[in-house]
Amino acid sequence: MDNCIYLGGLSEELTYNSQEHLIPAGLGGRLKLPKGFVSDQANEKFSKYELFGLRKSLLTGNRMRHGPGKRGNQNIKKEKAPVIRMLKENRDNGENLLGYIFAGEAYVLPQIRYSFNYLSGKIDVKYVCDNFNIENLESYQLDFRRKIMDFLFNEIKSYNHIDNDIDKNISTVNIGLHKGKWYLATNISNFDMDKFSNEVIEYTINQTFSLKMTAVEEVIQEAAKIEFKYSHPIDITSESFGFIFVKTAFNALAYLVGQEIASSNIFDELRNDIINCRNLIKYIQPSEMHGRVFSEHIQEMPQNAHCVYLVSKDNMVYSYVSFYNEWHAHMVLSDRYNGEDFVEGFVCDWKAKKEYRCK
Image 1: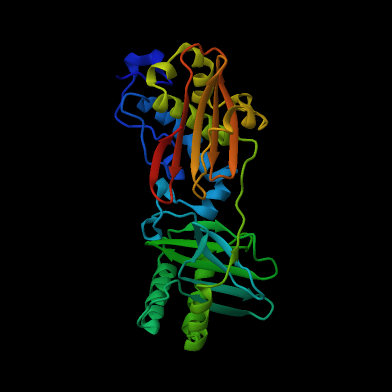
Image 2 (image 1 turned 90 degrees about the vertical axis):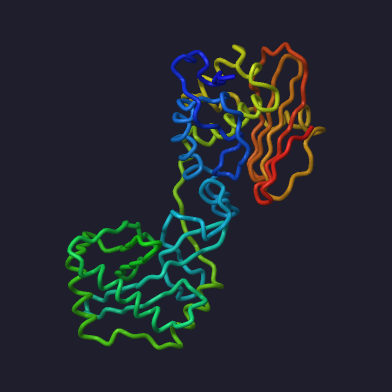
């Protein structure tokens, strides 16, 4: 039945071409609510809040450490658009390199790193490769050099600029390539791309652009082993963090208890706050309620799994949502419930790609 649990009062204006995930796909959720539960218009409103919550809230660190990637992807080969950043090698004299994090692992882009000493006029050039199974390393290096030079010679240079707040005592430029897109990071203030290109082209023409094979092989072998440090900004003031918890609880209510109950007017205030991503902190209660309401129902969880539980008791509808078994929220969804009591649970073992109901 087409009746949006969030915007049901506007039923004549709503469409139902898409489906809402019970647990966000960006956290590995696969199961979707049946068509007709959540409208396209509600989904569209949710997208920006959910995206912000996954990328710039306290949940972001868990996703970067554990995974999954975009839309629940767990295969690095299918990660089409990772967040490229500067990574700092966690070792003495380590390089600062362009790369990205996927499920807690650091991946380095094939790149050239230029460091400048303006007093001596010296340019140091270092080539770094991300492929550890290259049959012909020298050919690969020459091909990448050709691509770099084509990029620098091009009058219209299309690239994504990456902030470099890691290099402090030396002027550097990193140019990397990932899936046909160029990325450039520099700590040089008032950076002039055309001037830089001319300097590098002149340097390359006048110098023998080569690295000792042993040096390149050493970089490649170590790049697969070393750890990296990185920073990522989060916004602890945003409602998006609480939004993901509260919306997940309400989605689960509709799926586990029923669309009709979720559409009841006892949840009007809750649904309006979710739609507008506001006042969500008022639904989250102290964790002391866990022992009183949930402790006897929670099953042992797979590592880093997500879960949501719903319990009705004394006209109250409670929910417990846990992400990664590390972030937990206890909520009161309503204090005006007068139907039959229920205890329902749902587990998302996203690593094993398994989702199931439990009580």
